[in-house]
Image (cartoon, rainbow, N blue to C red; front, side, top):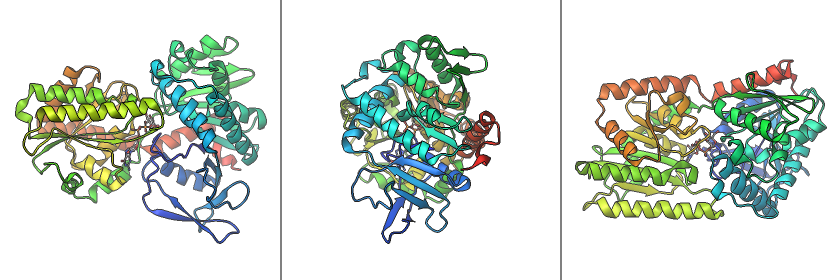
Length: 493
Ligand code: GDG
């Protein structure tokens, strides 16, 4: 498999350092300290790779001082056991700018989240995207054998699957999981080289999305822009140039046990000290938002709902505080920079409007929290608000539920997040663009009888623990085995 491994907090692989594990380099005295991310996709992949003894191909840091053990940046993981190989592809800064900050996040990200107005096409970005996809495809082909399973993560690699398929035997299985939505045909047409992208993705034997809706939009795009392809909408299959791509919906879960365990190990009221200057005490009813600072997350819309809540309920001043934890992300892209400013301005305005002597309605922080701190905050929060304008899945909603170990808390969830498909019946549904509606659901949350809160949370917890990260992985590999036809990973390398 391969993944961006960019460690900037994107894409569910949160890049956090839980404890710095050590990886010994082969034939070399130098030691590389690696971060072991807790709870995210990266942590979930580690045991799978250990079992499969495969190769994990990831984005290197492009720094010359990265200890190169051979000309391919290969290291064994874990150090004492050498279960699998981590192979890092160095991408020079210029390529990162064009490939990652360019085509991936100035074109594909806004398109897939239905923000065509934010698409920013620069002359060389597509070419860098092609070149980095080629570079990864070469490394994959080089590491794969006839029976290998190749599992590619996300929208940063739309072209690689076809390249891999073309250069490996038919018995090699190529699968990809697309972590974000797929747009409708009209939006997708805005994308430069959109037919190349479709052809690239159709190099997969298996293509996974969080929810079927995205898969159906993908099929609609294939139908519209690749007339030679034959699309079976009932069975979610595409035949193109002699090969078949099966589209599946496998919603991703979180490592619920880990969030549960770390939440239990914390004293939830200790989180008050994270916000020293603010009056949050044991009696404060606490609302919470945790997001990357990304325009798809609907943060200003959420703040508008909170503003409306205080307009309608002045008695809650001093008694309800909303903590917004925003993680800066992709700040080199102007649309992100502007978004951050807009959010900070909204917070300042609402605080100026409603603050009393020693209390402010919104406590805003851009600090990065450890997974333990985050779990404690989730546990302490009475109301969690997820107000995405579009979101492939949204892991934060599920992490909140997993960390709500006291069984008491309410989730407000946008009906535009993939997570709503499964959690929508027990969460309080919001349309993020309707500030009055958000305010009404906040009112409902803070005045809900305890028994109802607990009943809803109990059902949410059952769902999140049942459909956790491990189950998602298993679902992927079951499907891979089905399209592979010979037992999938058993084929080994
Ligand atoms: C993409 C899709 C899909 C955030 N701040 C801190 C921190 N985080 C962690 C959260 C969570 C992750 O970042 C964010 O995941 P989301 O799923 O909410 O959103 P995206 O980053 O947009 O992820 C999304 C996901 O891929 C997986 O397929 O669900 O729809 O957009 O895990 O906990 N973690 C720590 N400190 C922080 O300050 N430790």
